Length: 350
Image (tube, rainbow, N blue to C red; front, side, top):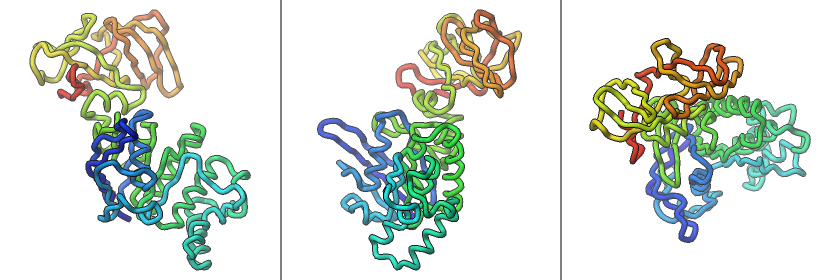
């Protein structure tokens, strides 16, 4: 196990700046997920940790050792790729043992390590099969087993579940989390799926346009986002954002809505954004009228897309409700769960 320290790291492709000065400290044994929209630089950053991309500026240290100039094979890391990267002409056992054979590891030690990894991942009945005889989830477990046998200081995962169907992704999320709890090895994981990040990580790093927007535990980012970008990115469905201004009696949204706030945190009259998650509304006769546009029942909950004071909103009800397009629902935000952001900078006000 090892810590991973990323300090002032930059990456340019020609004149284009992809990573623009990133600082992240990953503790020994921690499971950290890099998340962000496509093109934010998360996979590039992971490849720089792995040594597959050169670093334009800054420093990366693994277990206290600067690795900027070290080849991937010298960094004591193992990487699990999105496309599995298995050798089709080799069995599961041969795929898992190949890197050890290349290092000249004794045969008895190889067999022991393959056996242990296969037992951890439930692959023992599959050791004699070839990749074409495996499901997507089984192939991903083989790719993980190939990494485990190397006993690396750091595991790197590059969107390993993106090729799997929705049900299998949920299953594999649990398996990877359980693997980390069992091995307690440092893991750095890249995904564009914020649900993966929320359910698996010890800490999440939210990246946007080559910069770190916020680092924190999943619920910390959910409950107290540092800015509008994080607030909208973390959580599904996304947080509602209402345009308006702060006044002495509350938040005045465009369209005439007046929404209460816990306390005034900034200058009266300041343009601001009122953020409220879809699940943080309640039905009440004392609420404000919302015009129902679309109703999406899923069984366990009902999602309603509506117009509230002329602004579009999404409301999520855990209970089943009877609502049809064109009807009016009286709703009120749960005031203590609301968020305020500066309209110009997007930074949190409350």
